[in-house]
Length: 341
Image (tube, rainbow, N blue to C red):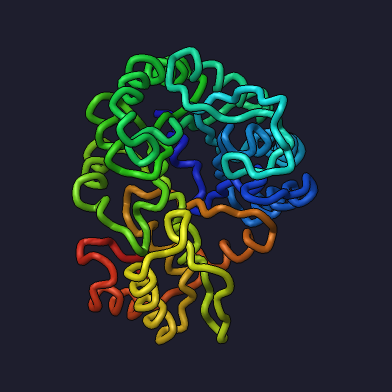
């Protein structure tokens, strides 16, 4: 039986929105160096999307990997569901849809059959290689509110057929959703057959409601999980050892964190301090304890962030730390905890 692509995905993956100029410009040279460092550190899974810099992230990855990964050992995932429409009048110096990109496009949601097939072909051209995993980008109420039922129907009637054609024909090896909510993943699994879900920010050191129904369903259906957003928009991306202090606002869900979240993080940090554990290390290692989770993919925008993520992921964390988190009710009692040697 041929090996599944999931079995080739590294525990630490590379979320590549930052090299698409997320919020601020990044030079081509820095983007290349970041990808190079990731491969040197053993990262063999990179996730991208047309939305990331309106094709810029995919272009930069394509150029870097053509030189750095000629044997194509790296597993690549990208997304469909947002087409790129030309915007010749766009002010390329300003933040547009979260990106400061030289690409004169904007992304528009479109889950139709033709849009998904066209998006796949355009991504393949920018990446200069075949695509291993294809996710549907930002389906669900989190992104679309009351428009969700109409867009979900559009996807099932059109985009899903395109995904099945690509997977069943061998053009891609796995399909799934790349979303910020587990509820739409459950809805999709009730209507179709998927291999892998990229779930951002919903199974983390701060949030574990996915344990109630979603993760058991994934176990039953043999669906793998990639955890994106393990730092919950940055509030967990802190070392805290050696007296290091936070700078800037505490961000959660892409906005300033509410008081209850700040209080919960402070309680977790107090446990971290007692055991000399970096908060970010705990945030990266916690999701991987669940048997359905095969990779965690923090965003990384420079070589230092790659090095830190690798250090945090591999740092030994004492079992007493996890036990105290559970005893204080800071993680759910049914949450699997990392096994300490």
